[in-house]
Length: 561
Image (cartoon, rainbow, N blue to C red; front, side, top):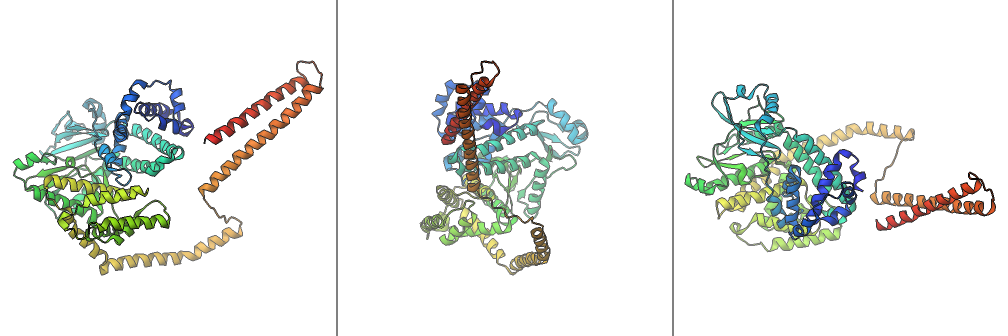
């Protein structure tokens, strides 16, 4: 039951809230299957049953989105992470998750002032010439206030909500336990990898709570674009920034979603689309550190057809080898090389599949890529091609590593933003030079020498440590401490079943002995005393009945499981 899985009374109230919302939105069967029904009984069944039928008529993606919205900030953030898992969810689900808005009522400035004094090390009136008490925006984790430095520069303060970390940590604990129960009790949900998604979400949310980490990422991205004046990243003011406070330059530009204002300002939308695409492709394929959420709300248009990127709370990272694999995949899609596309995807898959499934996947990918052979580059829609490829992976029950799903989601978002700016935007043409540079760089003499040196260093290190490792191995063998551990889930489950069966047999034998013994006492002994042998015989009979009931209930529950 979930109550035993939770283990801590501090999370019971939140578990009741989650179960109540799930049932009101028509997920009562899920609640029962993951063992939350008993928690509801302890909570007094204080549910709004009358609205369940009405809400159940919503399509499943819309119902899930409504559930996440009602459960609060942590679950809204979870939905935003799920929106990046284009390898797990079909487009209609991704679209609904994308509707989740990270908005929340603003915290009164009086409540955050004490925390602000602690973080600044002085009164806000001393640190700034002006500080607006009304926020520019308020989200679930933070809110943003405008301010002016003593030297006249305009800045913004991103302030973490007071007391938000304990709330988030409680929700993360409950989500982790819930994911474990879902994988154990709901086999049809395992294909969504709930434990992996929650683990990824936990890491992402904890990083997002650390504003100092966000500041360091912003500075790294700014350094990567030091030679690109057309790309602007707000500067960080470290004398005031830290874990709970981010003070950065204010961007005075046109929001990326306000295309009418961009036209009125005389900006070149085609040039903006090209520069935005080049910037994100550079982050992905050259720098290996990219903005994972480049939607119009995080982009500003500046005079001179420049672009500014803000909010580096969600970023992705790609290693050198991974960037080369991405380049191989995209180059294979553009050139119609289905064998390369299939090999890269098979290397990426995180699920163990048989050779027959791998052969079938290769065949489907070959047929998919073949339909685009001979199509002019300008007519290729890379985002649509990637979406169709992911649909093939979903049909095979495969998923991608989280860094790749984040990259593909950012790529699709970028392509959509480019077409909003320029209906003739050609993503394939923009990506082609970057792909060629990555492939050439990967096979350059310097890169080959670097990989060879790493391999040689690893081999030398292994050879150098081999005598010591052998010595430790032999020493453990001589002392009888050499153990061979085989961790096989099916064997462990078999052991559990055998243990339960042995327990039932033992209780059954004891019950049978009690029945025979008590029958003998009750029929042979004629002691009328209140506390005599007949009384003990009666007690033995009661114990036998209890043991028999336990065996029957245990067998019944085992068959249900």
